[in-house]
Structure formats: structure tokens, C-alpha cells
Amino acid sequence: MARTKDFDEAEVLNKAVNIFWLKGYNGTSMHDLVNGLGISRSSLYDTYGDKHTLFIKALESYQGLNSEKFREIICGEQTAKETIKRLLEYVIDNLLNDKSQKGCFMVNAEVEVALHDKEVSCMIQKNDQQIEEVFYTVIKNGQDKGEITNKQDARALARFMFNTIKGVQVTAKSTNERAVFDDIINLTVSVLG
Image (cartoon, rainbow, N blue to C red):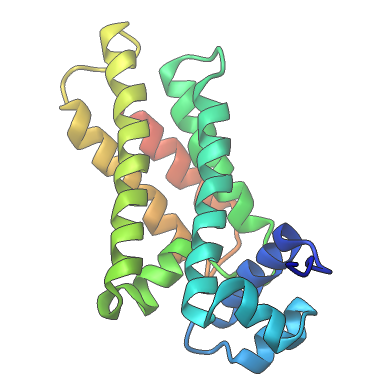
């Protein structure tokens, strides 16, 4: 008979996200995970296999939460420009509310791990494509309705928006001055015409 787990896997995964996010993949030891997760080493191995598998699951969890919020924002009743602005504000608000200034977990993983880890690289590429596609869809719909200028290609604008998000995710690691990010949001939205 299989033994039941005496811990909440979702809670443990959330703790793992925070540990890896704060310390990075290479900076996180198994000792850090056992202590921070509040489970035994054997439970950690039985449930997740190894540190790498837990890291992948943590990245998937983080991505899932952000994808859900993006879907919620784009399904609102606002104009395309307002949607773009809300997406940017959502990202920036999360960054500025983080007193540890950890930046974005996905971007951190991209910088630290993706170059040497094909699985992480593929996850990040897929995530990047999904975010770009969200912007493309909103922009293209906005152009079709006359809310956004047709002077720029919708795909090029989507890539610009996506690059803006990556830029602010890195910038937030060194500053939490709201005015800096408000300027970025306003200028970025102004590109839409």
C-alpha cells in the first residue's frame, strides 16, 4: 500500500519557487531545500526525484500563475491599449512589491541556467513565445478595430512589448523607483499610436 504524503505538495512547490528565486539554481543546496521546504530529504527525493526536477516543476508553477493572470487581463472589457497598459502594470506591480528585488524567476533562470540546460532553455523559449503571442493578439485586434496604429507591424510591436517586459524585469533588480517604471509604461503605450 502506498504511503500518503504528510505535506501539501502545492505549498511545498510554492516554497521551492521562493527558494530557487531568491538563491538561484546553483546557489540552492539540497540542505537549503530540505530546511526551507520543511520536508525530509527522502520525501523530497520520493516526490520530486532530484533538485533539477524540482526546479523544473517550480518554473512550471511560476509560469502557470503568470499565464493565468495574463489570460484574466486580456479577457477584460477594456480597449487594446488599456489591456497592454494593464499587462505592463501587472508585471511592474509584482516587481515593485517584491522587497527582495528578485526580478523575474523565469528571466533569472534564463540568465543563470538556460545556456547550459536544454530543458530550461526550451521552457523559457516556449514561455517567451506565449507572452509574445498574447501581445500580438491584443495588438492585432486593436489594429483591426482602429484602436492601435497600423503604421507598425503587429508582430514587431508584440516583440517590442515583450522586450520591454524583459527589460523591466531586469531593471527591477537594481531599482524600485516607481517613477522610472511609470515613464517606461507611458512611453511604451505611446508607441501604439
